[in-house]
Image 1 (cartoon, helix red, strand yellow):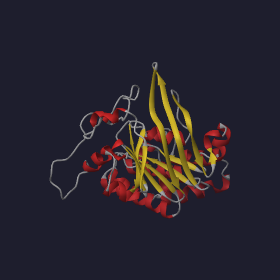
Image 2: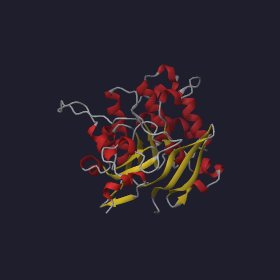
Image 3: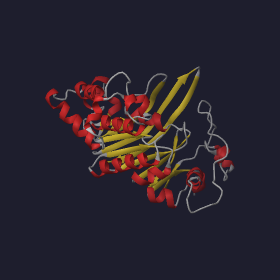
Image 4: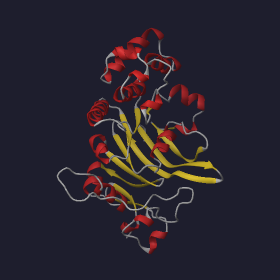
Length: 315
């Protein structure tokens, strides 16, 4: 694939207290140029770790132990740290980090923080102020906010500043990690509309969230993660209208609906301990369709244009 982002058999583990936590375990997917891809799943399923791996920002005790991340035909994991930092991170691929309140430095003004990103990547000094004004307007803020400090801004404004920071160098790919968390419904809608506009301009977006309703607003395709594994992958229409994996079916059933007054569905039990995951299907202890064969690791099965990791669909 010459254009786009392809993750191939990626494995990223945390090595701590004599334990090996398999946060991302043999994950593969493709994000084509100009498309948006949503990754859904419960907390601690490996979504954010996957995003950090793509940005090559996974810190100790985390480590990428296997796999490839191909961007426009080049394996970015094979690049030197200097080359990736100088020519790829923020320039070609950037990230909107989860929790804007923690992503901004409280002792520097917004302008200083945006300016630092541009300066570090060799942006012409004479054009910095103009570029900052452009990107601030792009995210729907008044340029005057750049003279403020993070504590002087609302949660929604800080979230937009974090988005602006990710857009400064006009990257081809943007990873948005829970960009609407802790925001009120109105601000959530504004952030979603902003991401839609970026997509229309040709930007490829990878949206990480536990909220399937938000993914449906933006994504072309959805990948569902559970306990470090990608257990289903397909188009938005396929995932919502004909989910295959029992876990995906349970996630869809748990979405509240205004017109449906039935009792809200939920998934019983808890995700497994990734330091000692169960053999076979990792959803085994919570699944309503368990069979003896589920004690063995299920293969990734193709059904039309979708993929599912479940023994129910093995011939």
